[in-house]
Image (cartoon, rainbow over all chains, first blue to last red; front, side):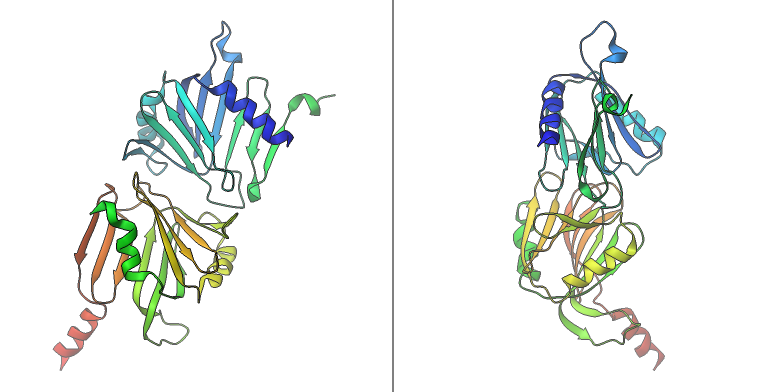
Length: 146
Length: 161
C-alpha cells in the first residue's frame, strides 16, 4: 500500500515535467526530468530502465536497445526538452508507457524475473524499483541513515 | 492486410495444439503447433503442420503474473515452455500500433511479444506447405509462399536417383 502511494506521488510530480536528458549507459536507458527550479541539478527525477524498451513515434519504432550506444544516444536526443504528458504502469507486468508532448512514446517490457526492470528516483533520492521477481520496492535513503 | 492480423493468425492456428517448443539464443523461440507430420526421435527436431517463429522480446504469463521472460536463464524457460506442451491456442491479441501480439492458450498461459528492431523478421507464422505470414523489422506484415518443408531434402534425394 505504501509502495503504491509512493509511486502515485512520484508519477503525479512527474506530470508536465521536462525531460532534461535521455541516454543509454551500460545497457540501461536513463531519462532525467528537471522540475522548474533555480538549482536544477537537485530537482531531477531519474528513470533507469534495465529491461527491454522502445522509443516510438506513432506506428514507427525510432530506436530500441540493440544498436551501439552512440547510435542510440543520437536518436534519444529527440526527447531532450520535451514535456512528459503522461505516465502509466500496467498492474501485473509493471510495463511503463511514457507519452511526451511531441507525440513520442517510451514503452518498457518486463522481460525477466531474475533482474530489476526499472527504477524511478525522485529529487529526495527515494527510489521506487521493480526488482527481481517483479516485486515493487521503495528505498528511502533517509531511513537507512543514522 | 494489417487490420486482420488477429483473424489471419487465428484462421490458421486457432484451436491447434502446441506440440513442443525450442528456445534458441537470445530471443529466438519456435512453437510447434498442429498436426505432427513426422514423429521424430528425441534428439531430432519436431516437424508439425505449423510453426510460430519468434525473434523479438517475449515473455509468458499465467494470466496474472509473468512467470518467465526471454532474458531469464534457460532452466526456468525450459520448465515453463514444457507447460505449454499440449495446450490449445484459443485466442490471439493484436496491438495495431506496433503489431505486438499475445498468443493465449486454454491453460490460461499467454505468450506476449514486443516488437523492436532486433531482427529482420520479428515473428513469422510458418506452414509446412510453405505458407508465411511475417512481421518484418519495418513493422510491415507480408503474406507469401516459400518452399514447402522438406522440399530441399526431397529434391536432393530425387536428384541423386
